[in-house]
Image 1 (cartoon, rainbow, N blue to C red):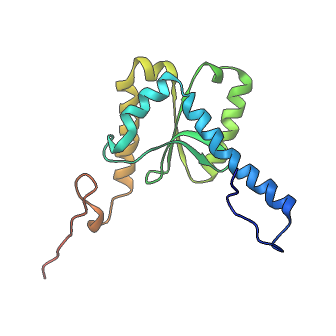
Image 2 (cartoon, rainbow, N blue to C red):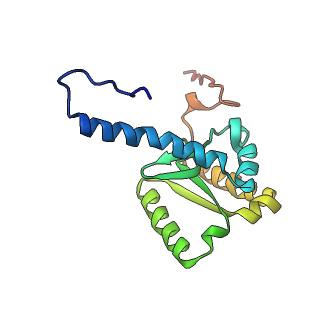
Length: 161
């Protein structure tokens, strides 16, 4: 396996660098593994969010944020969307979710949580919830005149004196 940062003679401690490299190399495997084992609800929601299909906002899937990997993330909205399956129903899982949510909120992020069953059976309701969040965000965070436009195309605002 090729090292991400090849060491030059006399640079750093080989053991320390090997530990850092191995942890960096593990992270993409974890993300890829989670992406390959997505729930059906996550796949359905991704089909609705991908490629700016929802009001032109770009979402990432299985995004690492701090020490967590979130289901969906939109940087522009500072929004995390989580799809919770049956594994989130236990008291222990609920407490872990609360702790995780607190950590992410302390990073300045907002969280929307949807039940996997709702995503699979009531997608319109789920999308209305996300659009409602976006509408509120846009009302409270208006874009400057030069950033407004249609479908991500910037238009120029002119003022005449």
